[in-house]
Image (cartoon, rainbow, N blue to C red):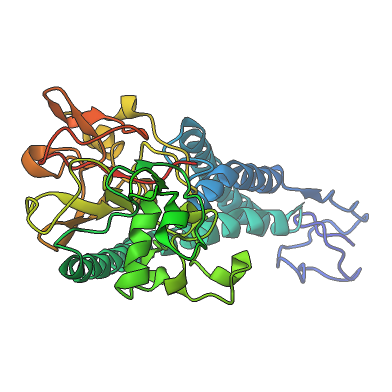
Length: 386
């Protein structure tokens, strides 16, 4: 016979259900089996979990590669909000479904759906919280690596200046112009390398070719010119370009695509305001790439989004992309390196990535191949263009 409460079949002479302990009072005729159905709440919990995971995909993409999809974009913010709502609903529905299934006496199934709807969101929350907890120390470690690199670069520049009339590295001749490549990075002499005239005039040079003088003459290793946060930037190896038989000191730049082997921007070395040992101590010498000049790792930001007098987000819009807009490591003339949280950290709040635009020095104007600092106190850090 069937129990009138739980519907389970019991022996014909049973008086108490062996499954739910309910009294079996009516034994005159057998009971029909109770219909067992899948809990709709359990199914709803499972569906909410799937929707939450789907909505979370843009957040994962932004966390892995913020240059493809910004964590601050409207899409990511909306997706994260929908994901949290869906996951929260999944947990509530799942817990409720588990409780109802347990008290249904076998009338409800769907335990697996409810368990997934309860457990997966909880696990996802743990997975999210762990990286967020470790994010700041990891970011700090990357900053320290870049800071150490710039400190090494600064020391190499002073070593170089001791041998070259107190001048900081400056490739080419006195009136060489800034270009996106030099004529021959494997040449046997500087005249052919930079395309100089017989009297040392003319020629084309890159920002990286000035950095390369530190590799050539100050024994700076190419790996110290790489920021680990800059994707698309790799350590220079002559063998990668068919020059494996040559030593680093035999070359004049980081191969045919030098901008892919040097992470840092440099105070404009070509023109009347190149740096010397007697330059103002507060001038910026080098830093991560300018946020407004295209680099191998990222497209430039829009300077219209930057406001030195605005809120924190407006100020971050002027910081280097390498550290997600939080700030940039800056090497100053007095050889100290600081992680600055604003780009207007030069002399008198001068913006280190722009040249003075009239009286405007905190924001300034974006440099191009023909730009020069406005004066001896104007820091203007630039990196090579494509």
